[in-house]
Image (cartoon, rainbow, N blue to C red; front, side, top):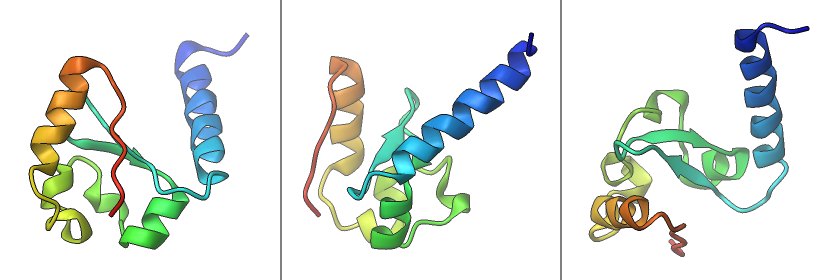
Length: 87
């Protein structure tokens, strides 16, 4: 039986694989408003790099011009809904 940490690692890798199979850019923002994960399509379309993890979306170069993006993310988190934006 795998230990919890090993199981979490396997699940994380599987989630990343599923996300990368989707051709629509996806950004996942944590409860603190910081970027937690993004898929391959987001990396390619927005030029995201691993060091963008932990940053607020509104502070990321390709997303910086989107008005009130951080506030919209905060609202989506508070309301427990997804946010879809065309950029």
